[in-house]
Image 1 (cartoon, rainbow, N blue to C red):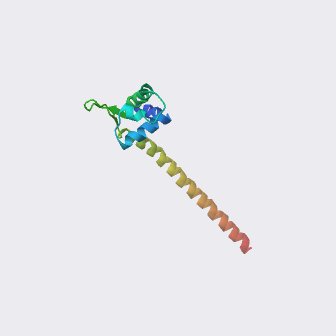
Image 2: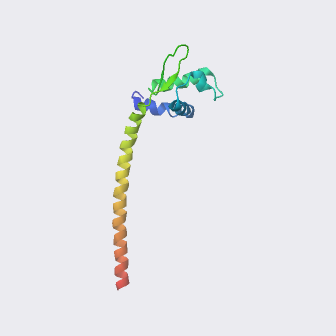
Image 3: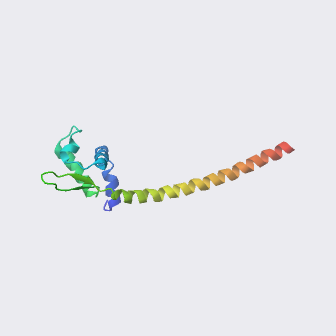
Length: 118
């Protein structure tokens, strides 16, 4: 899992980390603020943040005594491009299938019309 996309998807594979990302999307927060709703230690939340940092999703800054965590939203552009590529390919396949089904349905209607005319 050397590439960034793999690290991002792996990091987001955990529901706690997804929740942390969702909360950071609203606003920056400290480890203590992020840990508050969970029944886990600050150390456990710090480990989750480390995984998110290694994936490039989160950075920590220093603001006087505070060390807020910040979501790096541009990483989602990488994911979006990857997902969009496969969504476009799937859409094209569905359009081809729709065309085939419409063509088959047209043949069925014509054969029924011919049978009724006999």
